Image (tube, rainbow, N blue to C red):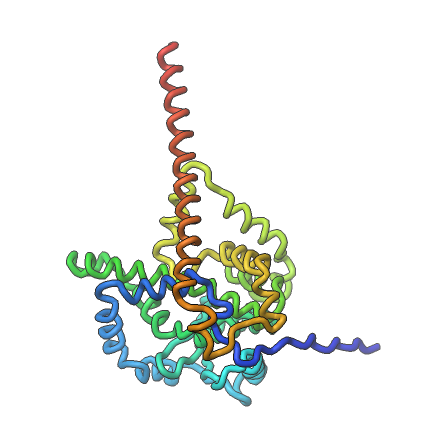
Length: 338
């Protein structure tokens, strides 16, 4: 008895879609803010000089990774080219696989960006999840993130404690600006990943596997997306004691948001209706970005986004302070009665 394999569900394509159609306003605003930070241009120039420019970065992978093509990881190449068609992108970025046991992927380069997947990602993900990951990285390419993400990744690895105190003081705001933008750029590319896969459960399953996945079907069978999303909501709602402060401090040095945060942000984007509008073909075409989505609108939207974050942080910190003050007063009264 043979079992028929169901035909793959046809995916929508997005002719001439512009990246601003899905970009998070905080991403665009943070990038604009990053470009105005004193010292950013000098840091970029020196880092690129150290790496030998785009050619030097590319040669690192040409010499020590596997370039994907029709006869090299052909299934991965098929997924990659399908996504280039989905987003109607005029070029197919080079794609490399590097032998690394840590799950990761990235988009690098300047004028001709390319994508790199760590071998651990291929071992961990099924085809649908790989489609999300590849679309995510293509989203970085289409948004022009590659240069700044390359610098952010390098700065994240720099130990400021090893630098002279003056260099540390000068580099700190530059590093923080890069990392803040880097985290927001991930929220944009997560949306591109969803548009590539066109399945919210698969996209959130990728976040779950990045957080705690393992190799093999038996391991994957023990994971549950609904339980992971419940965990995500619990993390967002946890504001007891100094939890808020711990969350901020734990995030400052990261290039990526927490995995549960990313899954929840993706769900909020779908709930906003923007995802469905793009799926209906209601999106901005390339060449019309400045007219249909001017940066001033994103600055205003990002201002509202950060203002809400600040209000929530202030509210939570105030609640913590009130609870601490109440506890101290009760302890003082108890001590007086003894």
